[in-house]
Image 1 (spheres, rainbow, N blue to C red):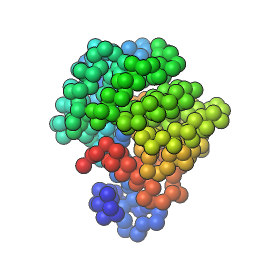
Image 2 (tube, rainbow, N blue to C red):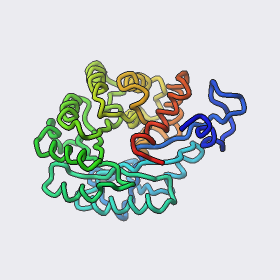
Image 3 (spheres, rainbow, N blue to C red):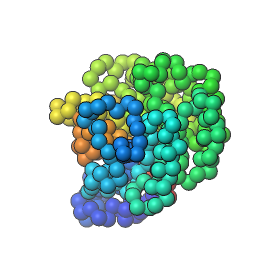
Length: 308
């Protein structure tokens, strides 16, 4: 996207970005690379506990209201860890949404179990899909032991994704980022996305996390989502300064060409509204160059996922 296209995409907003002409629009077009949706009448989420503050249905209409006025122009659905027997149903659901053109959703990352016996048949259906861009299995849950992502069956499944032109999202405990680095090395033909700044700690020591992120930042087939971290902050007691060390170190480790914004809605609402998270991130990067902000919020996602 060149400067003229950027301004045109933002033409509905009337204030200015620092460094732009006074009459230029300010609101950066956003591609949300981590959009969750779930309808509890349709899908079962085994991890969602009774009484959870996010124990409701979150449909496209609810998402549209949450992002209203923020210039979210496109979104990439992120799987929500449905029970395994509903994985195909989830994939069909998001495919229909992408094809409908009635929402911001233009692509999706679906659920999968790379180490499972039937994974190859399941994944092959998405080869060449203009909508299904990748697969994720959340591996930072209690039921998944440390080192799971280095099992030979798992590695084989991730290598298959590369052969099929599909990416893999790494969502892992921060103490296992070293395992993530080994996985990436084992699969040089697969494109990876590290979710949520590597799940960096908001409130505890970050010494090891910083070293691991520097190591991961050297892996050229890996990009990183600036997402998710606000959910770990203390609700109503946090500010941009609490998140800035994580955001800044992530960007320093990966560079401006390999970071992408993710909303992580509705999980982010455990501590912040969608708008509060966007506003906080904009505050953190407010002194950066305009083209760098555009890369973070829009351009890198468009390029990585091949979004027109």
